Length: 116
Image: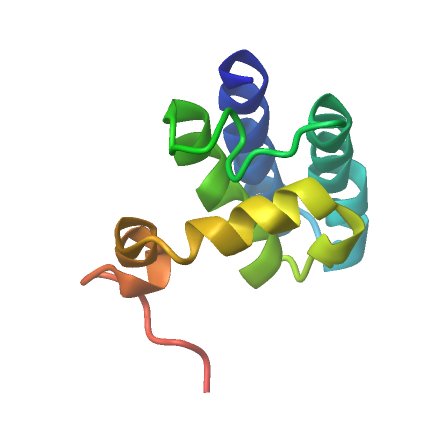
């Protein structure tokens, strides 16, 4: 799992940010072309997975990489995670863990104020 998540999701998020700055494109077009493609691939890899987290019932390194990417999809790009049941289940489990809650970007001291 680590070999798939580590290179794909961070680069997808960076590419999304770069494209949004450089081009005038809709949020939906960017998301459908990049983020969702990776999400579908990860979801397929997880078929048959019934564990609480991506690689078992305890948090592992793959979860540390995966959690912020799912969070970005949900909060920044308005992805409907109900279409991805494994990732949605993991995200809900991640958000129950205080360390994951504390690590969310909006909980950082230098986080920008939410738009009014």
